[in-house]
Length: 114
Picture 1: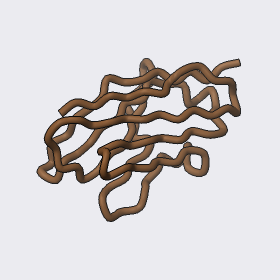
Picture 2: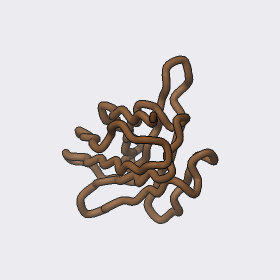
Picture 3: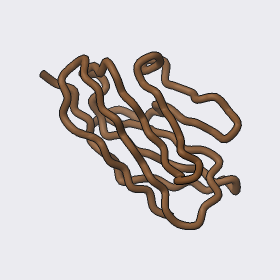
Picture 4: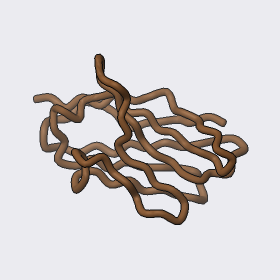
C-alpha cells in the first residue's frame, strides 16, 4: 500500500491550500486522515474521517479546515482556509484498514508566510 500526498506549498496568511492524498494497493480502508509536524514538536492529529463517522478536527483548525474522502478512489482531501503562520508544518496523510494496519504518506510541506 502506498500513499501519495500533494498540494503543499507557500501561501500568505489568510490564504488557502488544498492537500490531497491517494492510497493505492490492496487495502480495505476504514479511515483516512492527516497529521502534521513542526521541528521540535510532536506530530499532532489535524483531521480524520472514519467510515460511518463524523469528521474530527484539531481544535486549532476547526472551522478553517475541512476534510473529505472519496471512498471509491481511496482519496482524502484537506481544504485549508484562513491559514495562519502557526499552520506551517509538514503534513502527513495516513490510512487505517479495517484490520488495524496503518500506512503513511511521505509528507508535504505547507509554509504560511508573508
